[in-house]
Amino acid sequence: MTSRTWGGTTLTDRRAARRAQLLETGLDLLGAEAGPAVSVRAVCRQAKLTERYFYENFADREELVHAVYTEVGTAAHDVLVEAVRHAGPTPRERATAAVNAFVELIIDDPRKGRVLLLAPLSEPALSTRGVELLPSFAALIRDQLPEGTGAAEREMTAVGLVGALANLFIGYLGGTLDVPRDQLVGHCVTLLTRAG
Image (tube, rainbow, N blue to C red; front, top):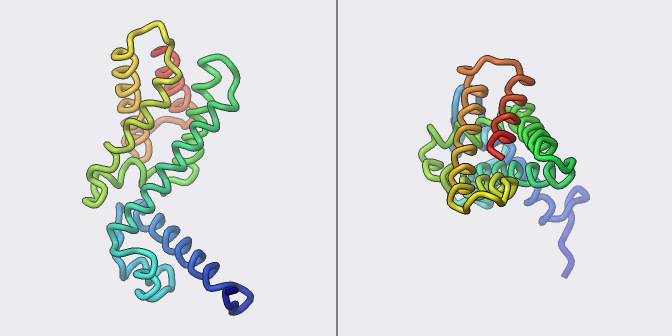
């Protein structure tokens, strides 16, 4: 059975477009400069969709918040993996590529940075989510550390670096760390290469 079209699009395509619109609006509201302001009513108003379409895609506001956060977290992980994969062979080249890719994602679109790093600090629905992502980001760093040190040392170094880098970016996004972008990037690269 073929899907009926309306206005040149299928029902499946329209549903996918509405879901994408709701996620984009959720990103706007969860990553707002003034802090997260996500409610079903606010999302529907800004997306210009009825609550019926909201509930067609999400059980409640928490499910939307989790979906937005997961989407940003996945994007961050993916850009880091790709950056390292295409970087030069030296630790410094890999660190520079990774930091630049991360900065481009979360600072060029600060909504994403605020969702990933600041929203878990103030949005109750995300109170444990940042901790859940920690192992995957620590693993990316651990995999770049030299094999010569023991597994426990490498793990502690990776976790410590994730914490240090996250706090640097939180300060930068929150306005408490007022340094030029290139200085932030350089400092992060130095942290990563000295750890190796």
